[in-house]
Image (tube, rainbow, N blue to C red; front, side, top):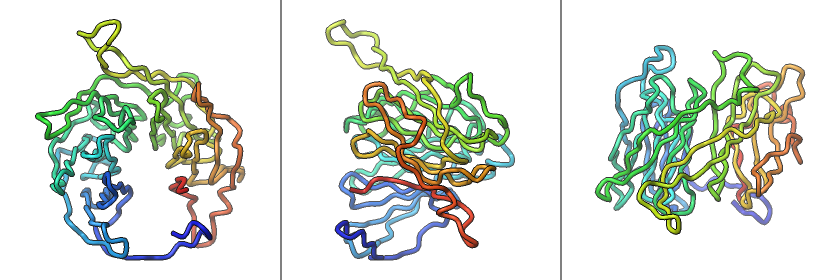
Length: 321
């Protein structure tokens, strides 16, 4: 990518597992991990040479399938996300109601723990680590697609060689005053946590409402037993629903912060029934309260991205420079 003129050229091409829907770099960006939804596996690539892609290995997740006979027919690796320490990848598996932890140290790239999500049939889609400060995480929050719930876990280390997750709480991705019109089709999508660890945002897709929505949650760090008032020990976290705004369209599959986190960029895959849906939009975000503006500061209609051959709007958005 030449950022001086926005020129993008293909540098290398290679074939791995089919249906990879999420990719993540390792800490020094010499390895690339891809979650294959179609194959239920994880690819690992050596990308240390900018002009080549070297296939390293494919990891099978396995595990017992969830109870949803229509959606949980096999393992579905939906996301790979690197933990803040830069060592472990979490893999959200919608088919087995589990979060697999992969250790990347010394290029091992092996599953070192498989953690069941407490609610059977919830379908883990995406997750977010807490905190985002580069140290060992203390919590992991999962957005479950099939039950529209947030599952909150505490994180602990095991002999310095693994991470394990313990379920602590659950709450709906919707506010009580903003339920989905069609709970059968509703499907939670993306989740991200702000760098200061105070706010989480979740997208609600296919709700049956005029537009879908983005929910905002406040995160509170709890003190653990054994600490003092002067030096409290960090305990778990609690999430509290704050508000919910329109996504401006249908099926906000993915969103992300600007680098300064003053803006949230979002996408919508489908148009609204009246044809006014936004495909890409930028929402202003208040730094202190985390509140998102209901009216976008900039947007592009989803119809700008559609044609006779293209029937879906954008599915990914991220600031590069």
